[in-house]
Figure 1 (cartoon, rainbow, N blue to C red):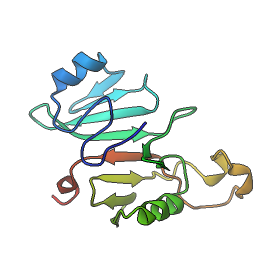
Figure 2 (spheres, one colour; figure 1 turned 120 degrees about the vertical axis):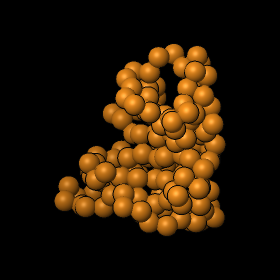
Figure 3 (tube, one colour; figure 1 turned 90 degrees about the horizontal axis):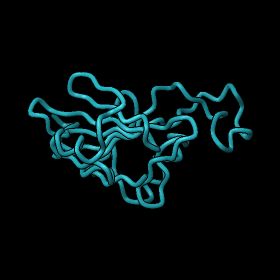
Figure 4 (cartoon, rainbow, N blue to C red; figure 1 turned 90 degrees about the vertical axis):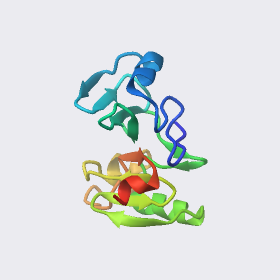
Length: 149
């Protein structure tokens, strides 16, 4: 799935109303206050709504057997964080560290909850199971101002 920084994904855009999203996608797999989860999609994603019911953030996550999130030709999810950061820097994207990943000035964030390890990657056989490098588990898309507030 392609992401567009500060805009969204093909299915959902920042600024869409909850009613518009649900009319296009149907009822979410589950929801909680201000957040809807679409686990029946590849890859899985969630939509965060502000108090007015407008999309303010979209998270695309890696799941078992799921498609991955891309920015152009750069695979963002289910790769080593260091490799993703390097590819994005080569592509001209600037970022700063946050507690669980990197926030990019263009309007997205790559993150890891440290629940995956490199040995799980497609080419995982080349990694030691004790390798503690982070694997990108998801990407959040929102306007750059979202992370500055």
